[in-house]
Length: 522
Image (tube, rainbow, N blue to C red; front, side, top):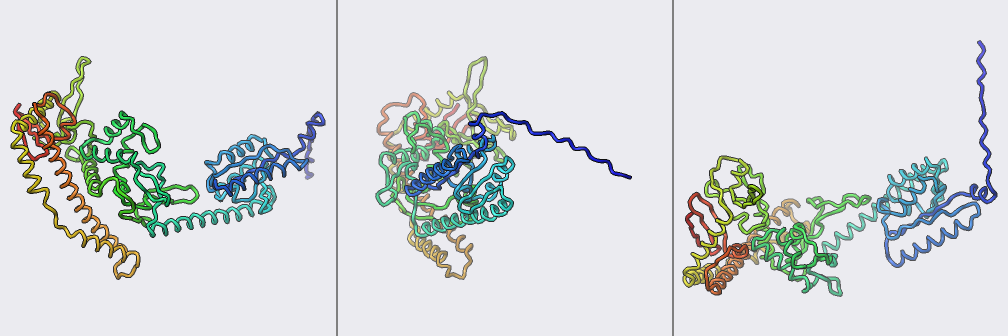
């Protein structure tokens, strides 16, 4: 059986009719260059300019090349291409078919991330775009190009990882030496001296003091933020917009009491630069009395206690509903006399008219059978005013009682062995650093944390005592200055005087911050 002859029909290429100028232009290789320096130092800036000038002249001198553009990123890291605008613009031009060849100094200038490097090279190869690396003398369209690229890019990535590790070790060494570096331009309340050490900025420190004061008076973070904006108080960056998160960050920042916790976050990947909160995976370093404090340690720790209290203020049997917002003075301090849950402010609308009432959260959420009453806000406000006026009816006796409390209770000093605690903390820290103990690392860390807790409890106790003394002195001053009965309900007055309100069926108990309880029948 004879095989059938295959017929092949050749389709000739079409002849292109071009002018001589267009013919010469079409035969030229369309070439671009990519330059990058990784920092913005003066030395690197000179290198950047030199690279741009070099490639402009180098490409222009070759008669067979047509210079398309010089793509240059200045002061951008090479570990990730996401933020390199010029690099990405160049890739887009290649994908659009406007570039045939890219020239760059080396693989490390192009990318230090092996995955990125190979992905881009393969994309470019599909478009028949070559990349030439001068230092390594590699053309990606050569047969051996990709093997060499893989090897060289891996080495470049290892170099990047090595540099990252060296930087990390350098930072940790400085942390161990107690060296603190803070971006003071975005740090409200502080600036730096000639040696780079934190010093108080008096033009801003009053804002921090105000925030802590109002927070401890019972105001919510949202209310504090709103009042700062109303008073046109600028943030660290000079803008007039405050948020609840801004206030929370300030309240939680230990630097405002003069201490510094280092390595709160750490980098998990030197390529992506992703940082995560430090959950104990890497060491942290706590430096006490690193710089001058804006608020005392006692006030700071009292704020943390208050923060924890608010975070744990829940309602209902299963305690799933967070309640504290601090929007109103009575929020969080108005309590149900039947189930001991919190009363919440609710808006009722009837025929377009709004009425505000307070009702037990357990009843509102139907979490259990609570038959407590609903109380109109106006009535509740009148009861609060009446309770305060009843207390003020015998001002002279009230003032004497306050003076007795201050003298007999609050001026007594606690006898905790504070110096002994400080010495034990010092010895435990020394054991941890010197590693000369038979105890395990975790055992020493546990003891350190327990001893710090004891110290913090003492500081909170002292702060609570001092705050109570100031509060009673403030109430005493208020009694002296108040010559007539209170006629209208004021939020600030409730924050100043009232500690707790318990609503029963036929009466309301108003507990004042002096410890006195006034019953108002209704």
